[in-house]
Image 1: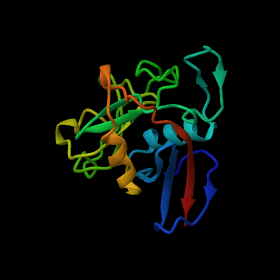
Image 2: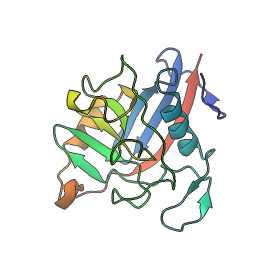
Image 3: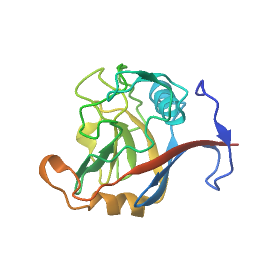
Length: 186
């Protein structure tokens, strides 16, 4: 199954697949998305990232189709664990105004650093928030849907993961997502 959204074709030199390029104020990294194994999670992420999936902006309560992740921050960083983003409120409490079910695939797990997963508040509460692991976290398997993996720029993710934090694991210095671009390579 492929995502139901228009995606730009571009050779990233990483082989065939669907990729998300995260441009941040700390650098860039690329994740390969598992559209065949977790189609709903990937379609949701791609639709929000490209602005092709309608959502309710948690700030304005208005319907929107602007790229969801652009301008958001990594609001939670836990050293030797993960970095979390995907909330337009920047607090860990906002989402797109809807929820969807978990997707688990037997070959996808939190086996090491660089796993891109849905953040949630329990079963069936996925929305827009996601996290990227900086270590193996097998205890998250069956609780958080893995839908991609960092394939380039893990050094940048690791550096973000070592950011000094304040209360509620919030980075002392803002880690901003400038854009998330989606590309397909043939």
